[in-house]
Length: 454
Image (cartoon, rainbow, N blue to C red; front, side):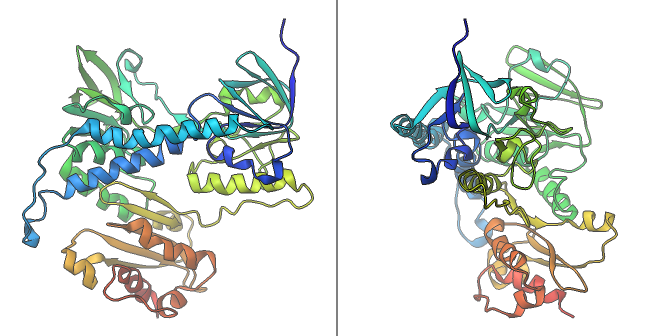
């Protein structure tokens, strides 16, 4: 016999950004939190935070031995992978556990561990429990996409969910994919001494980025790693510990395989349709501007409903959902205009707004300026020859349409352009309306903006 439903004022499925929905407005609400994995979601446990901690170590290793042109002799004496991994997860895992312990300790919150799925309208089944709620928030995130490659199911492969917890470094790694996950983790393992091969169906890495960035990034990475590009995978096989990835023209072998071909939302795993919740053609939960789904009283936030799949957009969603549930007469839409993003590879990449190819395809007039880091005093001091800042602007309004930076500290340098874009400053105002510190690297942004001036 099934249990009688347990009723709550609010049910939150997923404890990534969904966990922050529980503002003080809900201190006297009867709340259920549902989580099938570690508290904190993808970002804390297997995404942004651990990967960037690994990236920082990789950056240090990448620089070592490559400073002779500055008159400084350095070398990489060794990599202690167990210590690197312990530094990362020895700090992260206790945070996840303490977050769960804290929620368990609240009188008004009940934590349910296990997979959740709808079995009726606003009725969730979780590990033998049946939960109903006045309001339900879906923050169940996304998961790695596993492509239908012949033989893949018969080999021992990793995704971004598992590869960062390897017990030891392999000698050779094959990465299938060419997006930000492949770029960042390829840098990590290559810098730490693994022989990395990247197999990508597109001719370029980071093909969603601006065309100039994608082309330059691909050229740089191809000098470090074996890049097999324009090569869809036709099969995968394993013999002993060796895994072979085959394309139409070439076979690439390694001791470890990382599948980094994107991520898909988890709405299908919730059986959302049983509660009248619509999914779009790509599997994302459909919401209106206030993040209400097609089922009354059910809301969605973050990766489960946005293709951008960024932590900062998920946090913005959580703030909006929390406000809208607590203040139904004062609904607010999350601000997703001018959403910036970054790739923490080597070199770093950061962007906001439109790419040049998108503007061209739309037939929209634009002005363009590209300035190398090396044109600035600090870039010259670094002897940088590959990094640049690119800005795109409307020729009539002089407003920024897009900005793209590739090189050291690209995400930090981009932020001033995000600020100007969001507050409606013209490129002329951004260029002349403030003083840029000399000789800081921010002058590359100044010079790019000045180049747009008539």
